[in-house]
Image (spheres, one colour):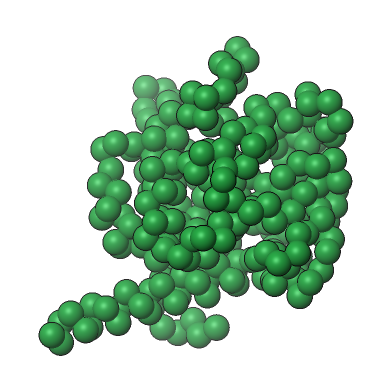
Length: 265
């Protein structure tokens, strides 16, 4: 990949937190670093402003959308689920930003890569539902972060995934049927949206990756975290970020070509 040319812009929606009477829009540093270093793109943060945004302007200016993980759960009212258990963390400003932005990005053919909370947002935005506490579903394993481990070990591999034939991951792995991933989530996909293709399942049947075959651009969501320092060394992580970066560069090239044609007309 040629990194000497102008890099495509990738929007990264932030989460919102109220702290000491101040509103903070924030995102984990690993996400921006992965978009820059592994995808070869220029990250730009999108504050969680909800309906205050001009989403059309955002879609016109960026070349890709990267949806990060985060502590909040998508509010159940967004997918017709029962009320959350008391104490569950939600971020309505993020919901009001990411859900419409996802739908508009897919409609516009904008490349999209979603991680952890991001895959859940992708499913809800397209009409799917979620399990708020997957570890309490009979037959499911513990998928939450193991907080007894030192911070540096929490992103280590935890369980296998089984990759579906004919999807994005199948192509990126050259037909590999299995991979090992980490696990740091409580919420997970229940019913996949109609337009979604299930790319991979865990050994206990949890949806671990999805794509949108009918989309005009690259769309991939994964339930695990490929953006950490150690996970970024995994061949699958490298392949996913490079594929996303390539899709963003292609989108950027098309957009620049259209601008040149317009000016020349």
